[in-house]
Amino acid sequence: MLKVNNIVKVFNPHTVNEKIALNGVDLELKSGDFVTVIGGNGAGKSTLLNCVAGVHHVEQGSIVIDGTDVTKLPEHKRAKFIGRVFQDPMMGTAATMQIEENLALAARRGKMRLLGPGITKKERESYREQLKILDLGLENRMTAKVGLLSGGQRQALTLLMATLQQPKLLLLDEHTAALDPKTAAKVLETTEKIVSKNNLTTLMITHNMRDAIAYGNRLIMMHEGRIVVDVRGEEKKNLTVEQLMGLFSKTSGTEIANDKLLLS
Amino acid sequence: MTSFLNALPSAVAQGLIWGIMAIGVYITYRLLDVSDLTVDGSFCTGGAVCAVMIVAGYNVWLSMAVAFVVGMATGLVTGLLNTKLGIPPILAGILTQLGLWSVNLAIMDMKANQPLNVNNYKLIVSLRYLQDVVKGDRPFYMYPLLTVGLFTVGIILVLYWFFGTELGASLRATGANSNMARAQGINTNVNKVLGLMISNGLVALSGALLAQYQSFADINMGRGAIVIGLAAVIIGEVLFGKLFRNFGLKLLAVSIGAVIYYVVIQAVISMLDINSNYMKLISAVIVAIFLAVPHLRSKIFSGKGVNVKAGKEKNNVKGQ
Image 1 (cartoon, rainbow over the protein chains, first blue to last red):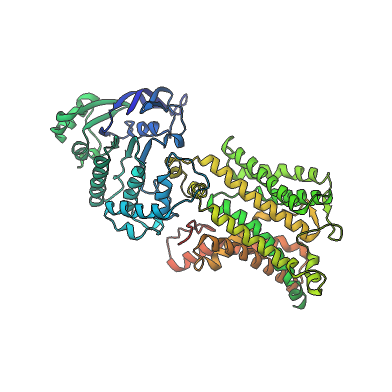
Image 2: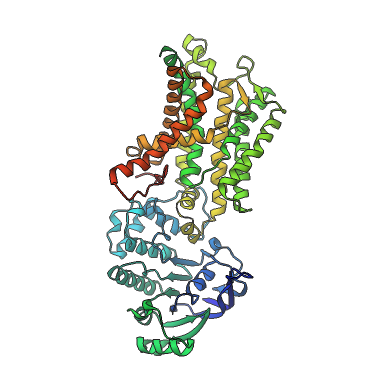
């Protein structure tokens, strides 16, 4: 479903601040794979997702989604294939627009937008049903501005928006990191529910090792712009946080110095 | 006082004409979240194109349609400077505005003024019609307040429809959160350009109406237009923000805001008997006061921790 071939991303090239964010990343996801991504700050996790989404263009290598080479496509054209939820709850929704308007915008991802109605009666009914899945009571507040919602509600809504039109690929960039533990757990639970129901190919960054092990069928660890650990199937299921930390220090040659990675 | 009352219908009519321009400003300032300074130039462009064409013998409706299209072209220039060449929107608008000064003179055959005598041409609105209708020399439907009022309502209805379509909604999303818009497959650059085009088309149309109303187009007629537009937007929001939640009514509030602004200016000038050269200063002061209201209001009511920037009371929701 996703083929990332040897991509390189350099920020501020030819300056003193030059940073090689991705240094030859290869990654292949099969249809239905749910891959969790961990790694320290600056490991290149977010850059990888942003390169796949088209926020950044890569210096080298190629990105293929479901047989289509998207390497040169701009962000808004890749959106046809990709659903995204961001770390910042403010980023995924339009605060000054209504819940149903946000959903209607998302329902038209990858389609021509001309002078047809921005939202229809039939759509409203369908959104009402789908909002019930989130179990947040949003189905009764469909004309409320999204700006009135809490961070957790907004992330759950963004998640629904990302999957309203079945994406070829779902990218979750630490989408629970800005939430309190209880809300984060609930949003993750919803994520799992939506991903498995639609059998979505998913790439999820997390700072939480326990979540990284608990969710998905494959786990990759990044370090200094490379994928250094890649475990799947049974091996991943039986992984413990201690083993994962061991793997980290072995491959990267450093101890985990990041509190966020340890706390779980 | 009597001079002010006598001038009232004229002031209201002019306010309504400026209101159409202000609706254009609302589209960029509120929906796209851009302060577009093209307006000062494109307003005159609209007036100049319309006046020159009518004098050349073209039909008045055709002249206004062309003014609208040329206005859209000015927005296109600003939009392309911004999206294709990466020039910040405010600077892009200033550049277009500057260039338009020469273009506007060229349109008027290098004259600073293009007369448009109401006696010689069939115009849609004119200051003269105010008295003519009262005297019974012309039918009631030519009364400028009615004509411009109908124009305003028509424009609001079309915009209400447009911003409810898929394309219109994507345009609002572009202004509300461009990251989200791109993630939902919206080409934000195209939408920014489109918004600037629609906005400046309306601004030029407003200029075309004013040129007819005052019987001339003038190279300076658009000077300070953006300030009047912002004043109308802010006055409308400060006075009707709580009352009008519907998108169409919000546009109406902008139009009413322009009328109030214009009437207040006229009142100040005629009552205090001020030299009309002070008008720009008075305008600036009035706009500064209204821009500061949301900021000061939140400061007074919430004590510390002011978050509202001057003039930034965001309203983007359509319908309720």
